[in-house]
Amino acid sequence: MAVADTPTIPEFITVHLGRPDSNAENIRVSFPDYIKNVASSEIYPTWPENAIRANIYAQISYALNRVFTEYYRSRGYNFDITNSTQFDQAFVKDRDIFENISRIVDEIFNDYIVKQGQVQPFFAQYCAGFDCPGLSQWGTVPLAERGLTPYAILQDFYGNDINLVRNAPISANVPSYPGIPLRLGSVGEDVSDIQRQLNRIAINYPSIPRISNPNGIFEEDTLAAVRRFQSIFNLAQDGIVGKDTWYKIKYIFNGVKGLSELYSEGLSLSDVERQFSRVLRRGDSGVPVRTLQYYLAFLGFFNPNLPVINVDGIFGQETYDAVLTFQNLYGLPVDGIVGRNTWNALQNAYEGIIDTLPPEYKSYSNLIYPGYFITTGATGNVVRQLQTFLRVIAQNNNSVPLVTVDGDYGPRTRAAVEAVQRLNGLEPTGQVGPITWNAIIDLYQRYR
Image 1 (cartoon, helix red, strand yellow):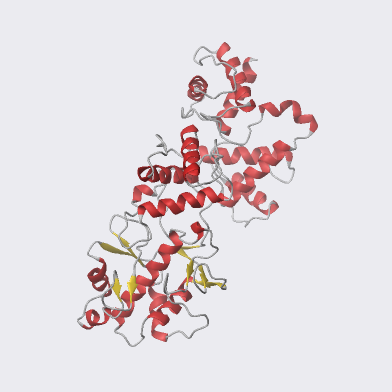
Image 2: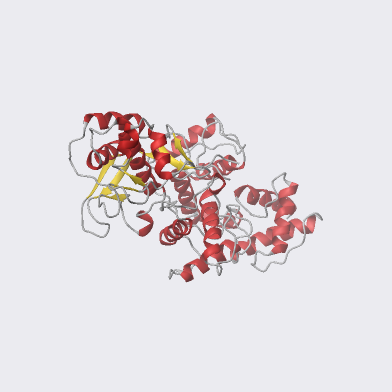
């Protein structure tokens, strides 16, 4: 199991200088500079330092909650937070920053509040008065004067069940939408995210069918859940999770979990546990690396500028050099790390070659992996071709059940795929990705 996707501190934050629906300017500032501005606008530099620190912790957590939940972006806006105190925190463009506040923010800008047992930054609601939900800004002053620490002051307002996350890592504020639509046959952590969120939404909207095995593979039960969700929320019922559906799911999920509320159901560690690595780098190994190598080797066959590599499941120097070359050729940051943008570029390049195969390769096109996982719920010519391969294998190997060539990926086809996977020492998942496809083609060519 991969590590969990816990919050990070964004390098920059985009602030809308007005109410959410106003035609106001957006400005992009570094996160520490944003917090310095907010603190200098919201509180007094003459307050006791422990009161200042408690307020800054709340301001950091409030802003991080907006970023982490994509509170505004999931509603279709192109900013992270507003400067309207009716909705968010005060921010004054080009204002002077108090020296002591600047010093404190530089020290603690990557610390934030969480509720115990939860991972999302706490929605640290606060106000200037004394009688309001959450933290009272002026109310922090007498507590600090009594000698309470910043943490004890926060506990006084938010409860004893809070923790402070210290020295959180800093990263680019990357939108959660993966950049390419998720559909039947998609695989990965983005699919896992959607499956978990749909299952939680289904508690409040029980007509959405539950996904029995949220394993990161977009199969027919995920398709049914997506279509029902789209029907309820007046989206095109195509079963594809494009940008609109992605952010509507996120918006409704945040709502039913109360992630942007003072009293929230929250996200536990298991809610954000990753099954798949979002990033591959030198030293990694296993099926994800073999999949990467498959794409690189295929592209290298048609592009002489790319080295042809072995598919051995080990991200060594050869694979690293091939990734660097690919990134350079396709205008990506040349770092040898395979993240979301490199994955998307690899898949797009692969599909582009399949769509424009040279005439001399047309007769082999049916043998080439189609570029997406084939799994339960799939239909059509690709499934029919897969069943043709499996039928030839079954006629020559009794351990593989005989399938009907009908273009419908049902239980019998899945059983035949699992049998081939066992024959080749692969995990019997019943889904056909590039490694399983190659194993099926190898057996088919041996028997035909």
